[in-house]
Length: 120
Ligand code: SF4
Ligand code: SF4
Image (cartoon, rainbow, N blue to C red; front, side, top):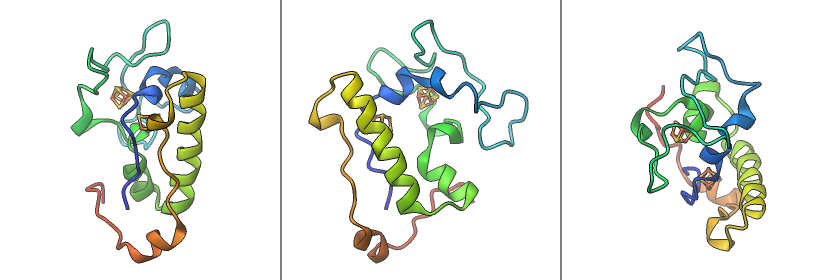
């Protein structure tokens, strides 16, 4: 079960809010983030179409399932925490229902085999 991201882009508009967690000097660290953001907090990698220019090699900080694998977190728990953050951003930016990821029932996780996201 992959994270049900809607692709709204709001987390990339507000990457500055993670500044206190970001690690700049250790590429092996799960919170390594080598990029900058503009005065609004928007990541320099977001293009005019609201897409990440480095999506296939984006940092773990930007990859919920990659972080789950790297840190061996509980998938349902970490998904739920992040889904609620997405809801808050969707509300803050008035993005509407389509931008809000759907909360997935626990039984679906239990029924769905772990998917290798390629980080381990
Ligand atoms: S805020 Fe949530 S739903 Fe929107 S792009 Fe980021 S992870 Fe996906
Ligand atoms: S690197 Fe890509 S996914 Fe990460 S914040 Fe920047 S635009 Fe978003």
